[in-house]
Each structure stands twice: as structure tokens, then as C-alpha cells.
Picture 1 (cartoon, rainbow, N blue to C red):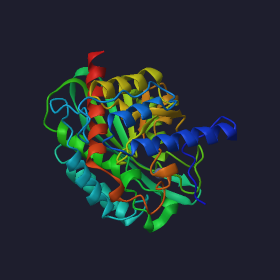
Picture 2: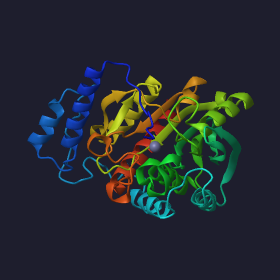
Picture 3: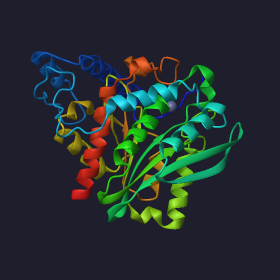
Length: 341
Ligand SMILES: [Zn+2]
């Protein structure tokens, strides 16, 4: 009954069925991590909303096309972080587990320039403390690239919902990025990592009951002039799914969305990107609204017909270090491309 409208279709129900059927078909196709050449070709012939995926070179290994020289993101360590985060239990705002996770993130950021954007949100079920955590890694170039992801889990789903993918994967990916950026002299834009809070609805997803932290931060950045300095806002959400299929979000800024695809293609990961498209409601929306180029990297086909989403089945066994690694590397490659623009 607590249904989060993460995406909204503006089409007829018949079309929705078609889109879902295609998505389901795609998802069943891409479950084969090591497809033989024919299967790969058959998969590519499925009508897709974007460029047909090309078979990856050297597709005998699960990490097909992943060049070791290009991959630097440690997906295994990110996976370890997911496990530690999930072990805390459900992490909705105001809970003891949420407070524990805040301390856990802050402890991992020891020695980094950290800002906390704390406020009290008025929600349909009362007032809740919200805290966006911002880690700043200074660069040599004037401008900021933001990588964000939420760390709260859905409040109405209660203690049985540990959100390994939905909440856990984004938190962990950012922690691993922090590890990789720490102590480095960034030859480019500054990078800010933002663990957003209160992404989830408290009762039912609406414009006012969702993305509490992101709305607050966007407003703040617009007021204090930070927004003008932000070159790109890259959001990650539910990117740990072992069957990684990041959709093409039509609410994202087109050129930045294309740049992400370029980054994925450079690394040979384009088969995990943009097989289908839909407008997503997520933390990036408030930043799009104030004119910051923003993109949402989200896999919303989590299990057949998205059945694991917002259920107790959103557990660590559905995730893979490889998917976290692919997303992490694509984010890093996107940052490289942004700096080269
Ligand atoms: Zn969610």
C-alpha cells in the first residue's frame, strides 16, 4: 500500500503494458551474464528505445569489455560497505540505525572537509530530522562536480526492509568514491560527494512527500550561489543490482545523459545502459529545476518486473560487486569527460 511512484508514465495504459513487457523481456535477456554470440545478437535485435547494444569484446568473462587499465573503482570494497550498512537494519530518518549510519559515514570521512546540512522536515507523519552529508574534495579548476545518492531507507516499509540496493548501494558507492578521492590532488573540477537524506516518501510518493533532503539542498545552493558553480550533478540510485540495466531517464539533462553513455561506451559497458527510457522521480529533480545539469543513474528493473523493489527481498544476495564496479567506473569516466570538455 505504500507505493512510491518513482516514475510517471504520460502514456496510455496499453503503452505502459508494452513498455513493461519490453523491459521484462530485456531483463530476462540480460540475466545471461555470459551470452554466446548468437544470444547476444538476438538480444540486440529487441526493439530498444536507444542505440542497440553492441556485443562487447572478449565477452567470455563476466566483466566483459572491462579494461583493467581503465577500471579503478573497487567494486568489491563497495560491496563490503553494502554488507556493513545492511547489517544496521532498516535506516529510515529518525531511527537509531539511521543515526548509526550517519556516524559510520562521518567516521569514514575522517580527514575530509565535510559539511552537514541538517534541518527538520515536516512530513505527513510528523517532524523528522534530515541530514545531507557533503564531502568536499578540492580541485584545481573553478567549478564543482557533484556525485550524490541517498542513504535513508523507506520509512513506511519498516524494519523488514533493509534496502541493500535501495539506499545501501548508493551509500556504499559514494563511500568507495571517497576512498578513491581521498588524499589525491584533483587535476580538474572539485568533486563533492553528497549522501542525501529523506529521499523516500513518508506515506506516499508525491512532490511534497519525497526528496526532502535534495529539495532543501537545492534551495540552499541556489540561495548561497553554489548552484552557479556546479557543472554537473550525477545521481546514483539502485545501482547494485547484479542484473544491471540502467535506464535512460528523460527527466535528466540530455547532454549530460549522453555524456554518461559516452563514458559507458568508452569502457565497453554500454550494454548495461539505456535499453529503455522513462521519466524518473528522484533526488535529481530539484537540481534540474534550478538549472543544474543533472543525470540519474538508476536501475528500475530490480528483479522480474521490479519485484524486489521496496520489499524485504531487497537483500545483499541480489547485488554484485561487478555492478557497483561498473557504475563507479562510469561515474569516474564521466567526471574525466566533464573535465576534458
Ligand atoms: Zn526506494
